[in-house]
Length: 278
Ligand SMILES: [Fe+2]
Ligand SMILES: [Fe+2]
Image (tube, rainbow, N blue to C red; front, side, top):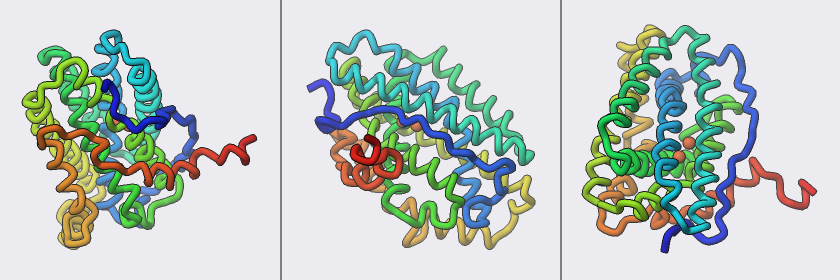
């Protein structure tokens, strides 16, 4: 079977305008610098990262004959294209606050250029499938756990929920394309180890820069509370560890983590019910 995304699941981009405030409140996540800059640092990586995902999948588009998977690829490209644009707008708000976003972007772009020049198209796609799993489990955590965005300004909550919703919808597309055109699990696991390293490294680096700019880098209370919020007993990242490790299991597929119920729950926020739209 070419595509194992649940039958009937539509993957379509939603055209939304988030009206992010300008200037953006420096600590828009409940006045908390740690929480805010964790999200900010991930966001800055998305515009280039998601364009890389699109390019990786596009290289194999012509080799896919299954009409359902072809349609899903179209939806995936549309959704990631929109994410990329909205997060670029977000980056511009961070630039306005004086953070050196250009340096973070240039580093990410250099790494992507290196990957595209030196790695085979199959390895690029493996990296995409791996990073899509990371975004999928982060998205699942964000939608499931109200703590993740508790206290954030509404425009930001909405933007992140929209992104998490669409990441969940298309979480298996790159994976299914990879299975069709290559399928090596060894390559996929290696890509995951490398992808995890650079994702954590780049996110941490971005966060450190923003905290330093805020004069909060050596604030021990910020680190204590922030690490508690992420990795503590009730931490938002704790429940994701098992789902992350599942990727390394033989025969893993993203929809083995069936969270269709979350899609049902959050879709209405962005798409009015048919009767209301008619
Ligand atoms: Fe995305
Ligand atoms: Fe994605």
